Length: 150
Image (tube, rainbow, N blue to C red; front, side):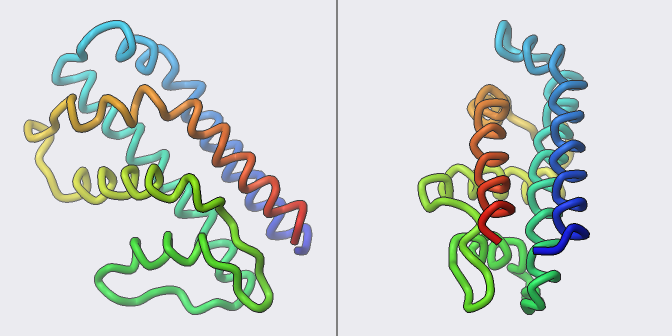
């Protein structure tokens, strides 16, 4: 892996770190009480941004390794699936143990892209929001391991 890709991945990591750091008051509030409509809307944006950052890193990696990016209408799912497979010139990016959780973040990201804010349900988001900071530690470790091994 050249320094260009490594620098871009480290930048994306720093962006998600900043997102979570800046969102900490909201995330803490959501752990203490059921959020109201405005807080749920803000939390949905944080979840959306969080997954987009992860997806940005995947796109950077696949482009660097000249891998074909999916083009179907399910390209987000296909992109994520590729991250759990080793290719001839690229190691697996994520450990299989986190696939189901990442799929849940992807499902929510898809939902939020096409839903009206009033359709947001705290029950659907709660586990994702409350687990996001710890899950980010796992994701970041996976990305850093990928950087070190490639």
